[in-house]
Each structure stands twice: as structure tokens, then as C-alpha cells.
Amino acid sequence: MAVRLLVASRNAKKLAELRRVLEAEGIVGIDPVGLDEVPEFPEEPEDGATFAENALIKARSGAAATGLPCLADDSGLAVDALNGMPGVLSARWAGRHGDDAANNALLLAQLSDVPDERRGAGFVSACALVGPGVPGGEVVQEGRWPGVVLREPRGEGGFGYDPLFLPEGSGRSAAELSPQEKDAASHRGRALRALAPALRELAARA
Image (cartoon, rainbow, N blue to C red; front, top):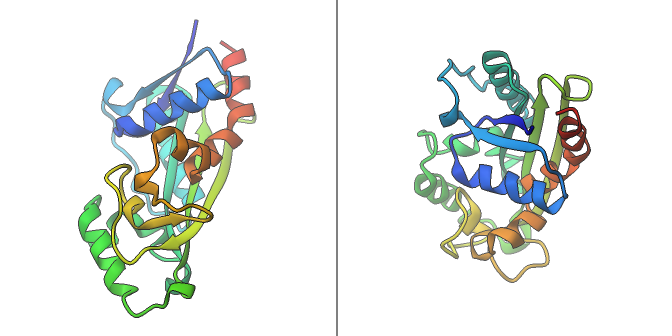
């Protein structure tokens, strides 16, 4: 019987991404379910100072409310010229949570006079796995995807800052990559793959 693993997200793309990573790692026996598939519970405010703290807040909250092992991630864009910001504020950089167009427009405006050689940035993701069956009760892994911020959006795929992010060594923005290409390189893909040993152990306990 498969282990039900709560993914602390309502984003279908994140569930699909986890399923692809599990398949690529050859991990069977885990059934990922999103927040829409469990009874609603009050979600803790994400007031941590780091991606890892926020991921743990979400994962602990989900595991405590449902009794299921819970996987949560917190991720964002750290821009060198902005001293690592927007960072943990990435989703609400322009003031409203999840307004991608406004966040992208504000970031472009803030970097308008920054020369190309100083537009370095990195997507960062922390993934936390918490709850019954998890080795040690809690595991957190981080992944980083280095690149630069473009001067205008490119591509229709992805979400968030993807159209403005040119990964290191790539001629295409994150929004121009296929889902499989993005999984292989992205910050969240790297963090999820780093969690593979813990996920494998979780599956083995089913």
C-alpha cells in the first residue's frame, strides 16, 4: 500500500513536478496529495527569516493537522544587486501575494540601471519533509539554480520570475524550458532530488 504524502501546496504544477522526480528516481510506493485533497486546516503564517524556516513551518503544520508525512517547499529569487532580495518575499515583492506580473515589473524597474555584468541571481528552494515515517522526523534540503536577470520577459512557460531568469550556461529563459528540462536543472528539482534518500526510506516503511 502506498504512503500518502501531503504536499503543502494547491499548485498542480508542484504536485506534477514531485511525481516526475519520484519517477525519475525510481521511487515507488508514495502517493502525493495536495492541500485540496485533505480536510481544510488553519495554515501557519510563513514568517521565517529563511527559506528553510518557512518550509519547516508549512511542513510541520501540515503533518500536525493531518497525521500524514508532509512535504513543503519555500523558494524564491535572490538577486545579487539587491543584496539577496526579494528572497523570502519573492511571492509578495510588489505587495500582493502571487501577482507575478506586478512582481516582475517591479524587479525590472529596480534593476533598470544595473549593467548586465551585475545582474547575477539565483533561484533558491528549501524542501522540508516532516512527519511519521520520515528519517529523524524532519529533513530539510536546499537547492540553488544560478543565472542572471534578463532585461525583459521571455517565454510562456513556468511561473513567477521564470520569464526573467536566464540560467547559467543556457540560451533560454526558465520560461522557455520544457517541464522535464526545468526539473533537471531547477532549484526545486535539485532540492527534491537531495530529498530522494529520505523519500525512498519513507516509501520503504509502507
